[in-house]
Length: 217
Image (cartoon, rainbow, N blue to C red; front, side, top):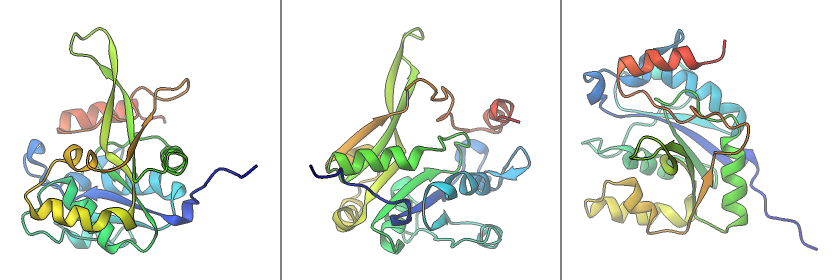
């Protein structure tokens, strides 16, 4: 009987995405806003680092501040910084491992077993992309539904890099439209013991302060 395929954490580079414009926060650099006294991007790095091998930050402003975190800082290669896919592309082009795991800087409570569960699903499903999904309120405000968390992706670099270049050169900008072109698997984080607020993100300073109150002491 053959053993199941396995991806070791050392084969995964973790990339914190902090290259956005922070429009809904008034244009401030979101990754440098503090979460319980720690810059959001640094908090994400510390949460991600035990789960993966190398780590880096994708940022486009205040690079010296990000470099002070002690990890590589990778700015977008595209001048207009057109959203998360630009960060994906930067990671795929600069990553030195077979796999890349992306997380946004503005979701500070993401699961501490994110990488292992995405890696298990990617390997067993022979997929190119493993994407997290989580329970969110349905449109009726009563029921809950599983929704994709498209910026939490584990990517198989060899089969994705050139295709993402072509997609973006053709004007593509939506993460979901790109992932739909590839073999992908959704990983549900709705099991007993999974935190219901793990994928809550902060688009405004008020939301950020609300998340601080949810973080364990």
